[in-house]
Length: 312
Image 1: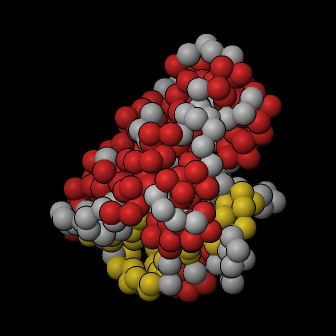
Image 2 (image 1 turned 135 degrees about the vertical axis):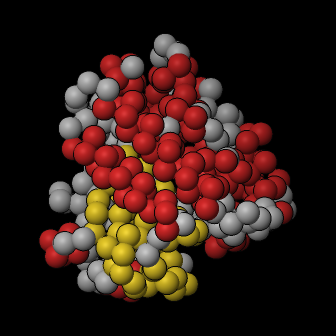
C-alpha cells in the first residue's frame, strides 16, 4: 500500500527497512514526521497511483492498514490467502501480515482507498497495550477472525467523503485544527469499520494469550525471549516461530512493541529523563532506549516528545 508518510517500497523517498525475516520478507516501518499525526491516505484511482505499486514485492508493515473499495473488482493476497475485492468492502491488514504479489497487481483493477496509521493517531488508542489491540472496540476489524466487512450501499458515499476529507487535511497538516480533524475523521472511520466487522470473531489463541499475559507481567523488567519461552516450557526458537505463524510477528517484536507503547506514554505524560524511562520499561539505559526508539519510529524520543508537546 503506497503512503506518502510511510517508509516502504511505495513511498516517494528511498525505502527504509525495519527488518528482514528469515524467509527474506522485508518489514517496513511507519515513518513518524514531527508534528504530523501518524496517518496517511492514498486513493488508487489513477494510472499514476497504480504505477507506484511494485510489480513483484512481497512485504509486511509494522503498522495498521484499512483498505476501502469504492468500485471495480480484483483480488487481494494476505498471508497467502486470496481475498476478493468488491465495491463497498473494507479490508484490514494487521501489523506483520504479508502482502503478496497478486495483492498489488490485482489491486489495480479496483478503485480503492488505503489508510495507514499507528494507534498513536487516536487518543483512545495511544496508551492501549498492543497486546490488547485485538480486544479494543475501535480495532474490531483487526481482531482475529475478522479482517473484512461490507459497507451498506446507502453508507458508501459517506465513507468516500470521510476519506477524501482525511486526505485533504493531511495534505496541509500545519493549518489550524488539522490534527484534531484528522483524529476525529480516523476515529469515525474506525467506528464505522467496527460496525461492519464480523460480530463474532474467533476466540483468542490460548498459547498466544499465555505469551501476551507473560509479556504484560514482565515487560518492565529486562526480560528476554528466552526468559518468556522458558517460563512457558518452550525453547526460544520454537516459541518465536509459533508466535510469528499465529500472529504475523515474532515474539521479540511483541515485547518491543509493548515496551515502546509504555515509553511513548511516559514521554507524552511525564517529564521523566530518558534514563528513568528506560529503567521503567525493561531497557538497559538511555542510549539503548534512543537506539530502539529510533529503529522503531524513525525519530529520537526527544524529538517525539517535543512534537507531542508542541501539537497539544
